[in-house]
Length: 116
Length: 113
Image (cartoon, rainbow over all chains, first blue to last red; front, side, top):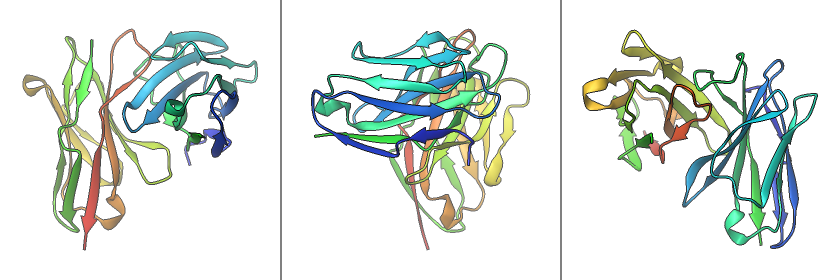
């Protein structure tokens, strides 16, 4: 158990809908990262938040957004969903002063999103 | 830009046999290198990491990896594979000044009795 929790475990929805994925980092970790794992794209970094502020952005679509709240949990919002958004979405957290890539990232179990 | 290549999509080994999973990276400076394992239905678990210093890195579950700058490689090894090692293995690279990791496409390991 990494200490990172993600809810829900599974999500099934229809095209055009909007969903919210939730992540609680390990106790004391200030950085939260979101990754998407799909069959065709592999594991791709989406976005990172550090202590409530956006720190880095990867291949995140404009239809997707995220935020980190004062209690450090994070939410990933996916809107206008398309079939191709079906994937496993992972959250990871790390400690460290500024969330650098030397910090070990601890991954949650993921949320499997199925768009029908 | 950095990238990671895992040339083997799927590897099958017998239980008790040795294992080597290949990872090649592309990055101009010294990268930060990681190996993660993903069991079915689970998240990713860090096996080991390399930042600097000794090029042979020991990890959990009996795994080790060797950083070879001349070959741009960071291969994962285990002398004797157990059935519980069956999983997907991901090599990842980070770099100075960046916060995220770039992952390879993964190698699926099957262990046969």
